[in-house]
Image 1: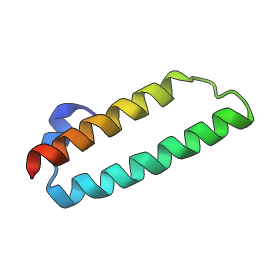
Image 2: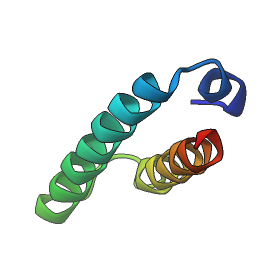
Image 3: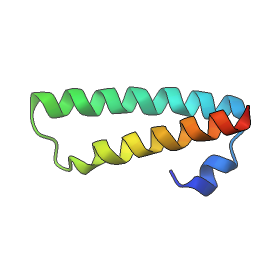
Image 4: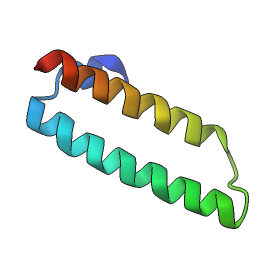
Length: 61
């Protein structure tokens, strides 16, 4: 998710997207702990998206 896409979202959409991204990150970490996932850089990218969303939420307040 790019910054331009994040800026188009409303505050409620940001919060719901953040929750779903955190859930996806937890699933990725769990899958990686069981057996190495194909592309472990997806975990890093997921963390960056979560940080972007949290920044957008704090800026919206």
